[in-house]
Image (tube, rainbow, N blue to C red; front, side, top):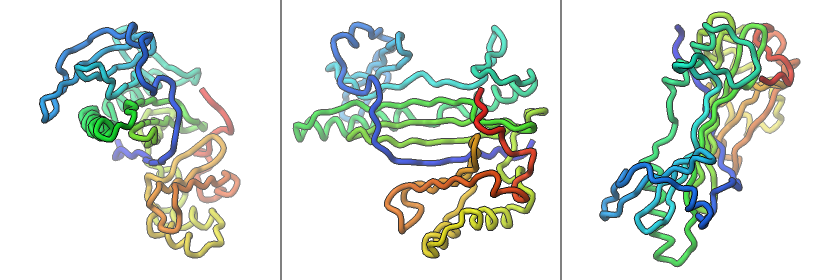
Length: 275
Protein backbone atom coordinates (compact mmCIF):
# COMPACT_ATOMS: atom_id res chain seq x y z
CA UNK A 1 0.00 0.00 0.00
CA UNK A 2 1.42 3.34 -0.99
CA UNK A 3 1.66 6.16 1.54
CA UNK A 4 -1.69 7.82 1.97
CA UNK A 5 -1.98 11.06 0.08
CA UNK A 6 -4.73 13.62 0.30
CA UNK A 7 -5.31 16.87 -1.48
CA UNK A 8 -6.03 19.83 0.72
CA UNK A 9 -7.54 23.06 -0.50
CA UNK A 10 -8.45 25.88 1.86
CA UNK A 11 -10.73 28.62 0.63
CA UNK A 12 -12.22 31.53 2.57
CA UNK A 13 -15.67 32.73 1.55
CA UNK A 14 -18.92 34.19 2.87
CA UNK A 15 -21.79 31.71 2.83
CA UNK A 16 -25.40 31.55 3.92
CA UNK A 17 -26.31 28.22 5.48
CA UNK A 18 -29.73 26.95 6.42
CA UNK A 19 -30.14 26.86 10.15
CA UNK A 20 -27.11 29.02 10.96
CA UNK A 21 -29.07 31.95 12.40
CA UNK A 22 -30.29 32.45 15.98
CA UNK A 23 -32.34 29.63 17.48
CA UNK A 24 -36.11 30.08 17.37
CA UNK A 25 -38.92 28.64 19.50
CA UNK A 26 -39.69 26.20 16.71
CA UNK A 27 -36.10 24.94 16.66
CA UNK A 28 -36.02 24.72 20.46
CA UNK A 29 -39.06 22.46 20.45
CA UNK A 30 -37.21 20.02 18.19
CA UNK A 31 -34.19 19.71 20.49
CA UNK A 32 -33.60 16.66 22.67
CA UNK A 33 -31.03 16.70 25.46
CA UNK A 34 -28.25 14.24 24.64
CA UNK A 35 -25.61 14.92 27.33
CA UNK A 36 -25.23 17.49 30.10
CA UNK A 37 -21.95 19.26 30.90
CA UNK A 38 -20.24 17.94 27.80
CA UNK A 39 -17.65 20.73 27.95
CA UNK A 40 -16.45 23.13 30.64
CA UNK A 41 -14.80 26.50 29.96
CA UNK A 42 -12.11 27.98 32.20
CA UNK A 43 -14.51 30.56 33.65
CA UNK A 44 -16.81 27.78 34.88
CA UNK A 45 -19.44 28.04 32.15
CA UNK A 46 -20.56 24.68 30.81
CA UNK A 47 -22.03 23.38 27.58
CA UNK A 48 -24.83 20.87 27.15
CA UNK A 49 -25.17 18.74 24.04
CA UNK A 50 -28.58 18.64 22.39
CA UNK A 51 -29.76 16.81 19.29
CA UNK A 52 -31.92 18.10 16.43
CA UNK A 53 -32.82 14.72 14.96
CA UNK A 54 -35.07 16.00 12.19
CA UNK A 55 -32.15 17.55 10.30
CA UNK A 56 -29.34 15.47 11.83
CA UNK A 57 -27.48 18.07 13.87
CA UNK A 58 -25.75 18.17 17.23
CA UNK A 59 -26.36 21.43 19.05
CA UNK A 60 -24.02 22.76 21.75
CA UNK A 61 -25.79 25.18 24.10
CA UNK A 62 -24.76 27.19 27.14
CA UNK A 63 -26.83 26.81 30.29
CA UNK A 64 -28.55 30.14 29.48
CA UNK A 65 -29.88 28.62 26.26
CA UNK A 66 -27.45 30.28 23.86
CA UNK A 67 -26.45 28.04 20.95
CA UNK A 68 -22.68 28.20 20.51
CA UNK A 69 -22.18 25.58 17.83
CA UNK A 70 -24.17 23.38 15.45
CA UNK A 71 -22.57 20.30 13.90
CA UNK A 72 -24.17 18.57 10.93
CA UNK A 73 -24.07 14.79 10.82
CA UNK A 74 -21.08 13.77 8.65
CA UNK A 75 -21.62 11.65 5.55
CA UNK A 76 -19.38 9.16 3.72
CA UNK A 77 -19.70 7.76 0.16
CA UNK A 78 -19.34 4.12 1.20
CA UNK A 79 -20.15 2.74 4.63
CA UNK A 80 -19.84 -0.80 5.98
CA UNK A 81 -21.88 -1.81 9.01
CA UNK A 82 -23.68 -4.85 10.41
CA UNK A 83 -26.28 -4.62 7.65
CA UNK A 84 -23.63 -4.73 4.92
CA UNK A 85 -22.09 -2.16 2.59
CA UNK A 86 -23.97 0.99 1.67
CA UNK A 87 -22.85 2.90 -1.45
CA UNK A 88 -24.41 6.38 -1.60
CA UNK A 89 -23.72 6.79 -5.33
CA UNK A 90 -25.00 4.81 -8.31
CA UNK A 91 -21.42 4.03 -9.36
CA UNK A 92 -20.69 0.30 -9.49
CA UNK A 93 -17.68 -0.75 -7.42
CA UNK A 94 -16.62 -4.26 -6.47
CA UNK A 95 -17.09 -5.32 -2.86
CA UNK A 96 -13.30 -5.28 -2.43
CA UNK A 97 -13.03 -1.64 -3.56
CA UNK A 98 -16.06 -0.59 -1.52
CA UNK A 99 -14.52 -2.10 1.61
CA UNK A 100 -11.22 -0.29 0.90
CA UNK A 101 -13.02 3.03 0.49
CA UNK A 102 -15.10 2.43 3.62
CA UNK A 103 -11.95 1.59 5.63
CA UNK A 104 -10.22 4.73 4.37
CA UNK A 105 -13.03 7.01 5.53
CA UNK A 106 -13.31 5.23 8.86
CA UNK A 107 -9.62 5.95 9.44
CA UNK A 108 -9.91 9.50 8.14
CA UNK A 109 -12.59 10.25 10.69
CA UNK A 110 -13.55 13.80 11.57
CA UNK A 111 -11.31 16.53 10.19
CA UNK A 112 -12.31 19.16 12.72
CA UNK A 113 -11.84 19.73 16.43
CA UNK A 114 -15.15 20.29 18.22
CA UNK A 115 -13.51 21.45 21.45
CA UNK A 116 -11.37 23.92 19.53
CA UNK A 117 -14.42 25.28 17.71
CA UNK A 118 -16.33 25.56 21.00
CA UNK A 119 -13.49 27.61 22.47
CA UNK A 120 -13.47 29.91 19.42
CA UNK A 121 -17.26 30.25 19.52
CA UNK A 122 -17.30 31.03 23.25
CA UNK A 123 -14.54 33.63 22.90
CA UNK A 124 -16.54 35.33 20.15
CA UNK A 125 -19.73 35.05 22.21
CA UNK A 126 -18.09 36.85 25.16
CA UNK A 127 -16.80 39.54 22.80
CA UNK A 128 -20.29 40.05 21.36
CA UNK A 129 -21.78 40.18 24.85
CA UNK A 130 -19.26 42.85 25.88
CA UNK A 131 -19.79 45.04 22.81
CA UNK A 132 -23.54 44.47 22.46
CA UNK A 133 -23.13 42.82 19.06
CA UNK A 134 -25.53 40.08 18.00
CA UNK A 135 -23.93 36.65 18.31
CA UNK A 136 -24.49 34.07 15.56
CA UNK A 137 -23.54 30.53 16.44
CA UNK A 138 -20.75 28.66 14.67
CA UNK A 139 -21.41 25.74 12.32
CA UNK A 140 -19.52 22.63 11.13
CA UNK A 141 -20.27 20.15 8.37
CA UNK A 142 -18.27 17.34 6.77
CA UNK A 143 -19.41 15.47 3.69
CA UNK A 144 -17.52 12.90 1.60
CA UNK A 145 -18.82 12.06 -1.86
CA UNK A 146 -17.99 10.57 -5.25
CA UNK A 147 -16.19 13.03 -7.54
CA UNK A 148 -15.11 11.39 -10.80
CA UNK A 149 -13.95 8.14 -12.34
CA UNK A 150 -11.96 6.75 -15.26
CA UNK A 151 -11.53 3.16 -16.45
CA UNK A 152 -8.78 2.62 -13.87
CA UNK A 153 -9.37 5.00 -10.96
CA UNK A 154 -12.16 6.42 -8.83
CA UNK A 155 -11.95 9.71 -6.91
CA UNK A 156 -13.83 10.86 -3.84
CA UNK A 157 -13.82 14.32 -2.26
CA UNK A 158 -14.38 15.42 1.33
CA UNK A 159 -15.72 18.90 1.97
CA UNK A 160 -15.47 20.44 5.44
CA UNK A 161 -17.14 23.76 6.19
CA UNK A 162 -16.36 25.74 9.34
CA UNK A 163 -18.59 28.80 9.73
CA UNK A 164 -17.28 31.21 12.33
CA UNK A 165 -17.65 34.86 13.32
CA UNK A 166 -19.20 37.32 10.86
CA UNK A 167 -20.61 34.30 8.95
CA UNK A 168 -17.23 33.77 7.28
CA UNK A 169 -16.61 30.17 6.29
CA UNK A 170 -13.43 28.17 5.93
CA UNK A 171 -13.98 25.46 3.35
CA UNK A 172 -11.57 22.54 3.24
CA UNK A 173 -11.55 20.14 0.30
CA UNK A 174 -9.70 16.83 0.38
CA UNK A 175 -9.48 14.33 -2.45
CA UNK A 176 -8.68 10.62 -2.30
CA UNK A 177 -7.85 8.49 -5.36
CA UNK A 178 -8.29 4.71 -5.51
CA UNK A 179 -7.36 2.00 -7.98
CA UNK A 180 -10.69 0.88 -9.39
CA UNK A 181 -9.70 -2.80 -9.47
CA UNK A 182 -7.77 -3.28 -6.22
CA UNK A 183 -8.97 -0.46 -3.99
CA UNK A 184 -5.37 0.65 -3.39
CA UNK A 185 -5.07 4.35 -2.57
CA UNK A 186 -2.95 6.25 -5.06
CA UNK A 187 -0.87 9.39 -4.92
CA UNK A 188 -1.70 12.13 -7.41
CA UNK A 189 1.77 11.60 -8.91
CA UNK A 190 1.01 7.96 -9.68
CA UNK A 191 -1.22 9.31 -12.44
CA UNK A 192 1.53 11.12 -14.35
CA UNK A 193 3.88 9.91 -17.06
CA UNK A 194 6.92 11.77 -15.72
CA UNK A 195 8.65 12.06 -12.36
CA UNK A 196 7.08 14.26 -9.69
CA UNK A 197 9.46 17.20 -10.25
CA UNK A 198 9.14 17.05 -14.05
CA UNK A 199 5.36 16.68 -13.85
CA UNK A 200 5.14 19.82 -11.68
CA UNK A 201 7.10 21.81 -14.27
CA UNK A 202 4.88 20.59 -17.09
CA UNK A 203 1.73 21.37 -15.12
CA UNK A 204 2.84 24.95 -14.54
CA UNK A 205 3.69 25.31 -18.23
CA UNK A 206 0.23 23.98 -19.10
CA UNK A 207 -1.32 26.86 -17.15
CA UNK A 208 -0.11 29.26 -19.90
CA UNK A 209 0.23 32.19 -17.52
CA UNK A 210 1.87 35.31 -18.99
CA UNK A 211 2.28 37.08 -15.63
CA UNK A 212 5.89 36.23 -14.75
CA UNK A 213 5.55 37.45 -11.16
CA UNK A 214 2.52 35.25 -10.55
CA UNK A 215 4.13 32.27 -12.27
CA UNK A 216 7.26 32.62 -10.09
CA UNK A 217 5.10 32.71 -6.97
CA UNK A 218 3.30 29.57 -8.10
CA UNK A 219 6.59 27.76 -8.67
CA UNK A 220 7.77 28.63 -5.16
CA UNK A 221 4.56 27.69 -3.35
CA UNK A 222 3.37 24.75 -5.45
CA UNK A 223 2.32 21.79 -3.27
CA UNK A 224 0.84 18.36 -3.91
CA UNK A 225 -2.22 19.32 -1.86
CA UNK A 226 -3.15 21.99 -4.39
CA UNK A 227 -3.95 19.46 -7.15
CA UNK A 228 -7.12 17.47 -7.61
CA UNK A 229 -9.09 15.89 -10.42
CA UNK A 230 -12.56 16.95 -11.52
CA UNK A 231 -14.77 15.42 -14.22
CA UNK A 232 -13.83 18.09 -16.76
CA UNK A 233 -10.29 19.10 -15.90
CA UNK A 234 -7.40 19.03 -13.48
CA UNK A 235 -7.60 21.83 -10.93
CA UNK A 236 -4.69 23.55 -9.21
CA UNK A 237 -5.93 25.66 -6.32
CA UNK A 238 -3.73 28.02 -4.33
CA UNK A 239 -5.28 28.92 -0.95
CA UNK A 240 -5.57 32.46 0.31
CA UNK A 241 -2.17 33.74 1.42
CA UNK A 242 -0.16 31.30 -0.70
CA UNK A 243 0.43 33.82 -3.50
CA UNK A 244 1.68 37.24 -2.30
CA UNK A 245 0.33 39.06 -5.36
CA UNK A 246 -3.20 37.68 -4.88
CA UNK A 247 -5.63 38.90 -2.22
CA UNK A 248 -7.75 35.75 -2.32
CA UNK A 249 -7.51 32.09 -3.20
CA UNK A 250 -6.83 31.28 -6.84
CA UNK A 251 -7.97 28.16 -8.69
CA UNK A 252 -7.02 27.32 -12.26
CA UNK A 253 -8.40 24.45 -14.32
CA UNK A 254 -6.39 22.71 -17.03
CA UNK A 255 -8.38 20.91 -19.71
CA UNK A 256 -7.41 17.26 -20.06
CA UNK A 257 -6.71 17.76 -23.75
CA UNK A 258 -3.84 20.03 -22.68
CA UNK A 259 -2.43 17.27 -20.48
CA UNK A 260 -2.03 14.66 -23.19
CA UNK A 261 1.38 13.06 -22.85
CA UNK A 262 1.66 14.36 -19.26
CA UNK A 263 -1.20 12.61 -17.50
CA UNK A 264 -1.62 8.88 -18.02
CA UNK A 265 -4.46 8.29 -20.48
CA UNK A 266 -6.05 5.73 -18.13
CA UNK A 267 -6.22 8.37 -15.38
CA UNK A 268 -8.34 10.89 -17.30
CA UNK A 269 -11.85 10.87 -15.78
CA UNK A 270 -14.95 10.35 -17.88
CA UNK A 271 -16.28 13.88 -18.62
CA UNK A 272 -19.11 15.00 -16.40
CA UNK A 273 -19.78 11.49 -15.08
CA UNK A 274 -21.31 11.47 -11.62
CA UNK A 275 -22.41 8.71 -9.33
